[in-house]
Image (tube, rainbow over all chains, first blue to last red; front, side):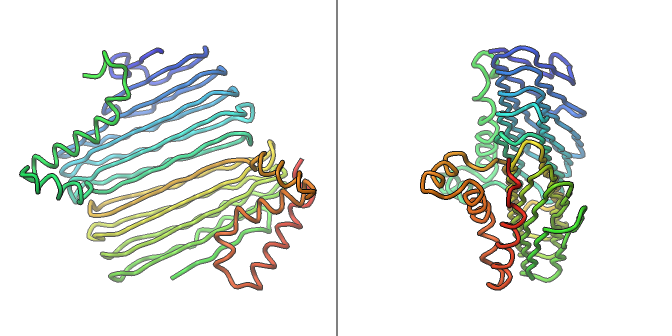
Length: 183
Length: 182
C-alpha cells in the first residue's frame, strides 16, 4: 500500500498508472485536487479533513476521474466548523465510457458548531459507463444531541462533551490511515 | 405542497419545480421520474428553499437512461439563517440500461444554519443481472423482464400518483422500453 500525504507532497494532481492500493490524506487544503485513474486494478482511498474557525474559508474541488475499467475509488471528506467559518466543497466522480466495472464512492460529512458557519456541498456524478456501481452522500448538521446529552449526564461539561464527540468524529478518518502516519 | 414530476417526452427537458418554505412548519415534497431514450436529454430536478423554522422537505428522484439517452439530476437545497430545525432528505437513484447512455447528478446544498439535519444520497447502477436471469428462468422474455424491473425501480414514485395516471405511465415506459435494451 502506498500512502500519500498531500500536505507534504504539495501535489494537486495525482495520476495512477499502476495497479495497487493507495491511501491519500490531506488536511485543510484549498484548491483543485485531481485524481486520474489510468490503470485497472487501482484501489484508491482518499481521506480529507477540514476544520474551520473564526473567518476561515476553505474551497476545495475534488475530481475522481476513472479512465480504465476495474478500479475503485472511495473518498471521504469530513469537516467541523466553528464561528463564521465557510466551507465550499465540490466533488466530481467521472466514469468514462471505458471505465466499466468501476466502483466509485464519495461522502462528505459536516458538523456545524455555530449558527454563523456556512457550508456549500456539491457532490457531483457524471457516469458514461453502464456496468458500474456508484454512490455519493452528503450530510450536514449539528452534533448528535442524544450523545451530547448522555456524556453530560456522565459528569462532563458541555465543552468537554463537545470536544469528545468532535474528537470521535475526526478519529473515524484518522483510524483509517496506516498506523505510523496517524498522529 | 407536493410536486409529482414525470419527464418522458421531448428532446431536451430542463425542469426544476421549486418549493419556497416560508411559513413555520411548512413541508415540501418533490417526486420526480425521468426517462431518457435515444437522443434525449432529461435535465430534471428540484429546488427547496428553507426560509422558516421547523420546515421539512423531501426530494425523491428516479431516472432511467437507455438507447444513448442522458439523464441529469440538478437540485438545490438552501437553508437560510434562522430556518432552525429544518430537515432535508434528498435521494436520487439512476439506472443506466446500456453502455451508450449516460447519467449525471449535480446536487447543491447551501447551509447557513447549524440546527439542521441535511441528508443527500445518490446511487447509479445498471439492471441487476441476477434479477434478469431469475425472471428469464421463469419464462419471462428478456424485454418483459427488463420492463418489469424498470417499473419496479420507479414503483415508489408511481404509487404516489393517481391510479389512472400510473397505469398510463407504466404503459408508456414499457412502450419506450420495447426493444431499447441491447
